[in-house]
Amino acid sequence: MSLTNEMISDVLNLSQDDIEHLSSCRINNTLVINVRLKKKTCSCPNCGSFSIRIKEYKLRKIHHSLLSLDPCILNYQARRYICSDGGITFYEDNPFSNQGVNISNLTILNVLKELKEPNATFLNISPIIRP
Image (cartoon, rainbow, N blue to C red; front, side, top):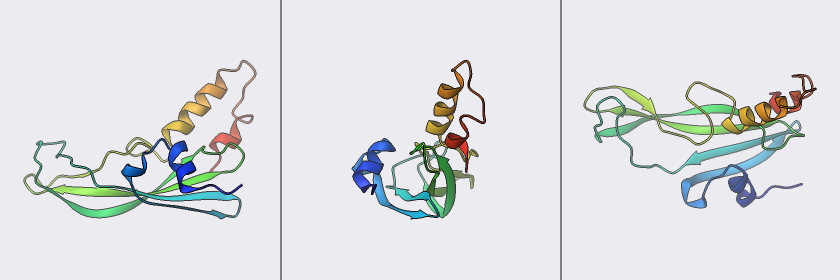
């Protein structure tokens, strides 16, 4: 089955207006989604200053349970900002995962949902969490 960008954005719960770049391909039975979000106005989390600039883009590989049968990797190009006033660096907010975590929020929710079953084991739900 071929997935369109509209289908992928719907599953990722993203509006087309939030997406700067979106593409996908299959590599060795793994669905790889490349995404960059549009820049949004934000402020320094330390001092609240709006005097910030983009320092760099960092590629974050996030394991996602978009499809339960095939592994899915979300290559997210995260913006890293630097505050001109305080010099602190920080990442933009993203809807996929929390800071420092390489598993999507949706995958974590799916694992917890599957573990509610009385006979569920980690081995049973491994297709959801395998990299």
